[in-house]
Length: 294
Ligand code: GLV
Ligand code: MG
Image (cartoon, rainbow, N blue to C red; front, side, top):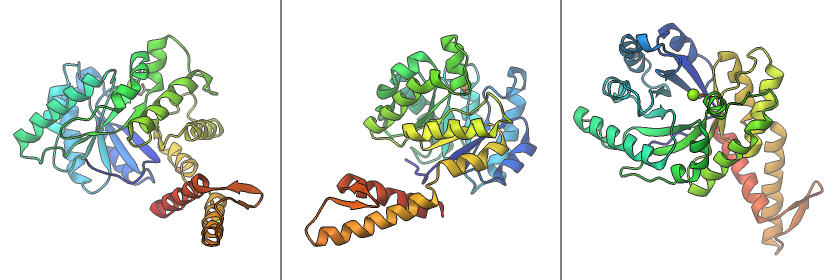
């Protein structure tokens, strides 16, 4: 399966707006997702595919993913047929509700890869979970291993989740705490990468609320956030990166602990905080992450 270091931000761009793709690749987003699903009117799907394909080729070398239409739509076969190209490494598949959907996606992708002479397993999947059933099945979905293995992680879609549940999403997001926690736990327990959080859609001008929303997702264990406007990118990149203080403290912990350990102690205090093996390991990960995004 393809690996990508860390996705703090994945910026959606409507597939029928190629000019916006060009702009999006010049933002600081770790990934750009060209959307063929809900951002594109039904009547425009066919004329959009060649535009998207062209952009994939043009921006080869950038991290560009594609969100295709759902597996049970009339569009999916043509989406895959026209958009699986050598330069595409990841697709987002919306409305994933059961592990069978991952198997079905693998079957379709394997057929297309074979047909196009692309090495099997070249395309990895990010499964968008956005319904009550999807959330309930999150662990089973995240645990689904296909041959070749394709599931990189899952993402949460709060708009469709709210539609399914008949609820309103608030700025404070209390109503999505449970699905967020479920998804983060499911990914961890299944041994896949941490999930990507829903875009913040409530108020595109409220950067303070966006920041709080991104922080909540980070606290639950999400690696990053889907973004729907370029102005969301910078703030989310910042929230999903370790802070200067975190990095400094982590370095201090690692250094103090290795000294302590060599003199026979495995539990110390650093700046009044208790430090033992799990804390040191966490500090090492923070330093690794800091290096990755440097
Ligand atoms: C994203 O697709 C969402 O439904 O929020
Ligand atoms: Mg959706």
